[in-house]
Image 1 (cartoon, helix red, strand yellow):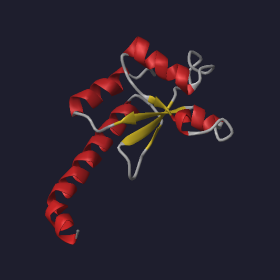
Image 2 (image 1 turned 90 degrees about the vertical axis):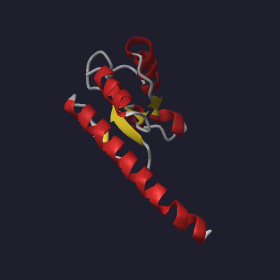
Image 3 (image 1 turned 60 degrees about the horizontal axis):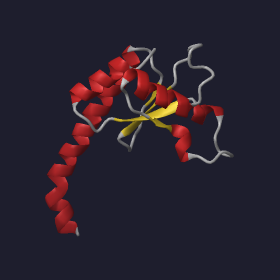
Length: 116
């Protein structure tokens, strides 16, 4: 096992660097648009807050994600999908997940499509 990890070391270091660059790029692009984003430390998903806007205040995270797909051609995962109804709180229902393990051009296009 140690030999395999040693052989994979350079690859894993490059992969970690690549994901960090993509994470930082995507978070910066979203924040330029005034999106509140929680910076992950060990995942290739970022959490973005649903905009504080009268158009979205009454929507659940699931409804907002459907609207993202239908109106903005942007896919996100509602955070409430990972919690039971008992665990679901206002904080959980106001955030969605985006995967940043994508090409830079895709990340930029996604950030630009996010409604603010």
